[in-house]
Length: 338
Image (cartoon, rainbow, N blue to C red; front, side, top):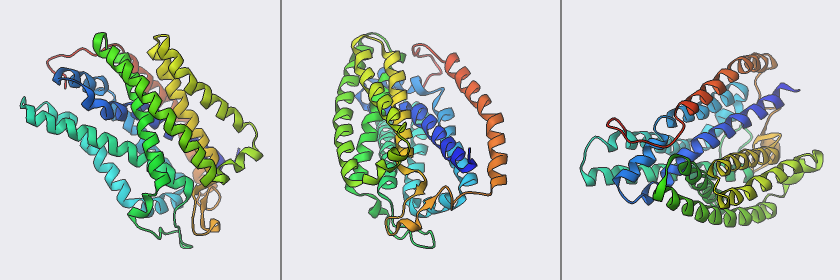
């Protein structure tokens, strides 16, 4: 396999890993204000407390891999999305600060402030991730010198905001399914109802976004003519999404969560299939787009990185699996809990 193609796929794997793992973290934050009292909000925070920082390592790894494998694309992305990236970084930092600072005082006003900050930061991060995907599909104004030729508000186009809203609904659904695994009793039953509402909102946005994508971005299907097997990914995505309400109806939140994870992975695979061989599409002239061919590092660099990834990825996966195994089960609040 061409090393450039291999690293395009590996970047997709890292992005999918982050979306699945930190996706439910963000989803819990989006749903945080739905808790009725302080105890329920503490349950929400402690459901992700041992895991959230490890989940974000996948995003750091994705950024590092992009920098090493496709440095030209990394540089152009930061020139185009610099302010958006700073806002995203601020949102991710505020999530962490809100979790740590919330319990430093018993004052209701203090806790309400940090609860609102946690919700707002989670919502903003989820929205910004979706906007970035939407802009990547449409393309952004990249000049011949591979510099971004627009402003921040040029990124906030209706289609990009629609994809952002879709991502918010998807992560809220993913987070609600995760919370069902960590709660019990009346709270779990109430979260189950949230899952149905989230699925309904997501499904509506998903169908609408698909129609708009086919109309606005017809080139998204170009690779499906070259590689007909990609329709199997579409089928897998539809089946995974359809299995979520089925498993909810049968009272199996664990299987519904796995179906949600599979749906997220398949949607990212479809995003990659629509984008390939481009990394960043220029809306000014397709010839100015950054691709796996013109933005890649040297073959030697890609080869060394592939060897490091082959040695390191099994350890990362094993460590992640071990952490999730240790912290499995329902949330129990203790003296040192958030």
